[in-house]
Amino acid sequence: YGVYVNLMVGVYVREKTKILPLVVGGGALVNLLFNFLLIPDYGKMGAAWATLVSFALLFIATFFFSRKYYHVPFEYTKLSLVFIFSLAVYFLSGAIKSGHIAAAILYKTMLLAAYCLILYTSGVIALDEKKKLRLLLVEKVDGLRFGKWKK
Image (cartoon, rainbow, N blue to C red):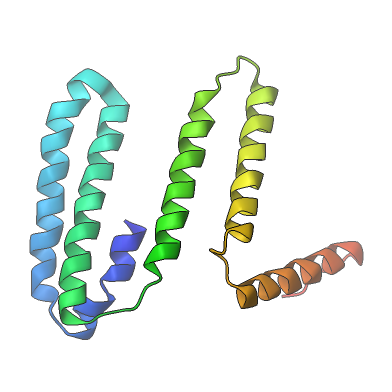
């Protein structure tokens, strides 16, 4: 849904908002259809998958309409890598089941740290963004060390 919202820029800039009810309505109909199909057998997970499918439809439709009216040069390769890494972490987080809550928290914390490290080292985060991130972190650490937060 967040990607859909970002892609609407072209539609709003060119004042082609008349297509939005069609796109959103189509997404809502798909959501209802998949809810009817999936909830009886899969319950809450069926509703979650139905919502994911409808948001994917919103994304795809808005992507094509927005590009038609006003092209925004997003970094699609980087966005795709973030999506792939996120999917990998999602599936890995469910791969190991632990009966102990502390082990599960540790495992998922390690996955989150690995995800951040992968994003940092894979080229998804640009060099200038890395420098800004380092400066921000140093500033916050200094604020903690000296007992004051900088705003």
